Length: 168
Image 1 (cartoon, one colour):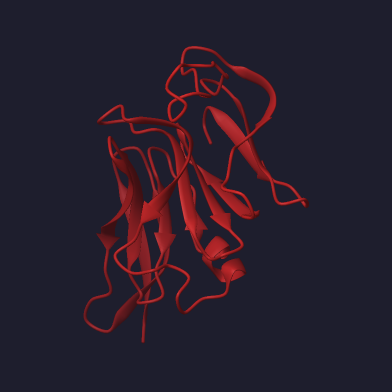
Image 2 (tube, rainbow, N blue to C red):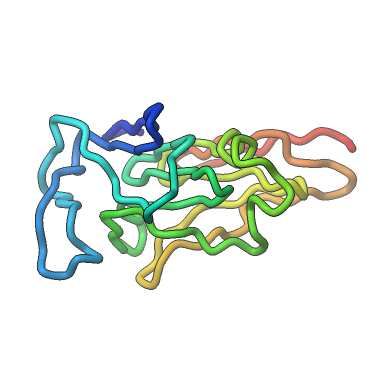
């Protein structure tokens, strides 16, 4: 990401470090962990539910997406428009289960970093933007397959995005 980095390690853990990724304990455990007013100079482990292993990560300026070995997607960080903050990964609510027809490694391979958001290439040929909201994370349509074209890749810039397609 622009402000921070993330890594999935061989032991299945995900770590973040960098600008605005500082750790700060808070009374509300759901909000504990992320201090957007301080920096994390060393990698800090993200908390995933017991038994889940991180197999891939992607970053935007203020967000980190984590793909897990069950085919799930998780998102943490701060949403640029709403300022919703999730210091630990929260599951992404997808229009349909992302890993239903894909192996977990394929779910991870479809993550795309961006400036203000992370996107995901769906198996139906569309692209989804992962968004943090006050009540969790959701995937919203970014680009869809039209006129026989499937989205092959997507790049999210600050003001503009591009989706590359190929005729089916």
